[in-house]
Length: 410
Figure 1 (cartoon, rainbow, N blue to C red):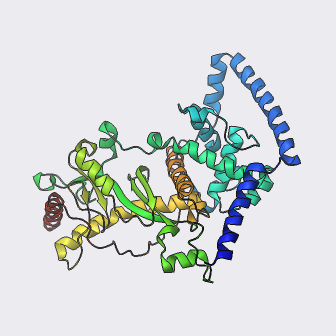
Figure 2: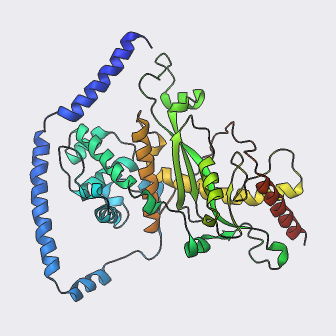
Figure 3: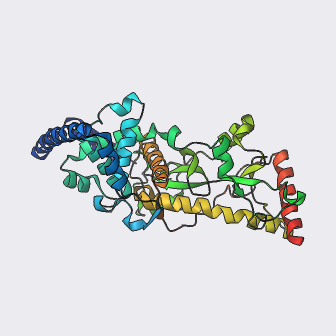
């Protein structure tokens, strides 16, 4: 990249910043502020009327209102696209969640010169997350300048990120015991001492990549290959984020770690945490992960290399569970289509958007709103061979594979 191209890139960045910070309010925004003032007056009047009603009347209204008792499965293309197609109560529930958060930040109004009500902010942000549409398109729909939409959206992401510990949490105690499921469906009905050494599964560990825009100064300006294709061919480490996840059998995320593409660590932090706090894993339980992850007493991975019938049976048993995580990732990307390519060159902001999607994924699952995305095969990686081996992990894997094979023989 020569000097003129550096100057051009810097000029664009400065112009973007000036537009966001100093562009005056448009006529449409002034009208929007007036509309909002009227809306707030009407809302205050409505709240006063509700408070004046006797408790019995309010209870009757709640009982008579429709509620989805069973999970609602919708096609991916219809998930959260226009406002009229979003899940019943989704926008309202997220608005209430942000309002009830104990954080001081959550009680402040969102950034941006044009002040949206919280409900409209949630709708605007869900629109941006759920579809790969430009800020300009949303600007026309919400009658806001592009710079304000940018600020409001990232302020929303910051507020949702505060809910990470509350929404993406590791199960403990009774909740953990209820989350366990059999390693093999064949052993689910088996009894006797020969199957007592086979652990139950708490969750499935894996990862996916989220393509992002390269930071200024790292583009290959001479290349004519489109950016997403160039990322796949050249695999520049700054052109994606690593999203490491652990999910339960429902596809709900129990653990989430987001790192730069240059970070080659595979679940090292999680491995160390489980080793230091073994109480996080119920007795006789494990996580399962694909090859490339560390094999430990708490994380079981497949055999690699030349395999016999015992090892093949064990690998096939684990393979069944990997589809749970694959489907959870597919659902995440189908619901929040912006994750298919984040046109953001700033790592911290890109990370905030990805974490927002992961938090909201759990929120919608808890509401019973399920999206079925199409599972895409992840590209092979140099790390897909045998990961780090722990002596205790090797012994446990051998013992489990032996018990599975013995049970099949019997």
